[in-house]
Length: 311
Ligand SMILES: Nc1ncnc2c1ncn2[C@@H]1O[C@H](COP(=O)(O)OP(=O)(O)OP(=O)(O)O)[C@@H](O)[C@H]1O
Ligand SMILES: [Mg+2]
Image (cartoon, rainbow, N blue to C red):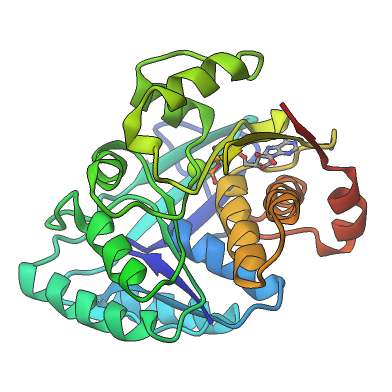
């Protein structure tokens, strides 16, 4: 079973209008999905046919509704209940733009977090791989992912971490490292204080090699949107070039990439296939209007079109 963690899930609500009329009425039909990056990962894993359990924190009537949305997507879920209401995030598609309104979500108490860690520890025992995705809600200390990584490592379960800012900093500074991190180019540049482009991968390699926080991480994968990704693994640098496609909606492509990595790692795939599978999922998500959803009937075509070379 693959365990996905979503600490701050949301009812993702998309409204589409041709033109947004400011300071007047706009009539809309909502499209609602169980969101938060870990739930995007979960949806893709269900599409890939994996046995998964989604966990995290879920609260109030919104939390109950999120549970129904997960059921509808075939996602098995074992979330820890909290008192606060889970959040709603709004994406407004208008005039060729995407305007987002993101609630910060509930405040989590220390007792609720400890209940979650207990629940997580039980679930990890049955997991072949764990994914930790997204930001941490208010009240949850920045080193919480580092703690979850250590719990999984104790049971020899690989952990894939996709977060940014203070939560990523804390996980990189910890003694026990995640198996894989997947910052995008902006996130890694923020972390290193650099401004590398996809054409400066040897400079990026040198910067990562000089930074001891990355030394014990088995896979450091930097995703670069339409340019594909570069993986630093086992002393090798593997470049994956994404096939040229018509991009419909690339939101959640990083989450889909994480799903592909988890799928391949849990199946014991070789290095090249891990990278190919992650990139295939990222690209197939970019071809689909929904976030965290792959155009599965293009699997074979895209899977064989991802170009992998060693730098
Ligand atoms: N326009 C595109 N064409 C082809 N492949 C793409 C495109 N955009 C993304 N991908 C694929 O998806 C992967 C992840 O994309 P990206 O680097 O944009 O992730 P991200 O910024 O973490 O996204 P998010 O956080 O929204 O999930 C890329 O490495 C690539 O394989
Ligand atoms: Mg991302």
